[in-house]
Image (cartoon, rainbow, N blue to C red; front, side, top):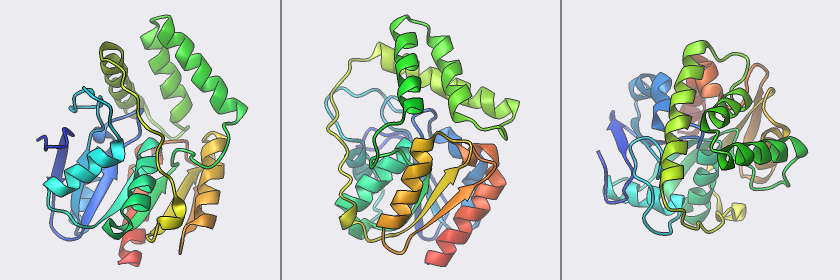
Length: 254
């Protein structure tokens, strides 16, 4: 279903609210492996597609993802929620917690997008190569570059196929739509009150590993945990293990 925020979303379960925000490589389907586990753990679980991803339409005007998500929470009558964010979704989670700190009870950040550090050569090379492929209309090759870069060695063939499907859809929508400017995300971390778990993967790019360490240092009552087996999308690489980690953290905070 779609709310007045224009974000396609799912809601299930009873109990404290738990919002799941996806990576831009994926869409809300990336949470399929954890969905039932989190519902059964006693949460009212919400997941949404950012604009231009999954079932959400592309933007028709300038926008901010954090404000889209806030509008969705308002439409669902959710005043406060724990938030789990993967990569870009982690960056959106940080902005929500910084701008509306009273609404976020806990933050679980899985390789959150790096708001704090300059890009390393490795990330800059990926972004340059991806842009070259898009400019050359080599969309399939751009998809494969994303799959190879963002999934770690634990990801099986089905997982790679699912990420390939989600990323191809997002690129197709992006290339067909008009581009609108988005203001830089607001990452005033000093406003964040929620306790946080910053997760990194040892096989991820160094930017995201460094960001997780820095977030755990700067955010109140927070800790960093590095997964030695993980790449950039651990919730897809070892779904059950990540689900246990999330449930343990969220129950600990509660």
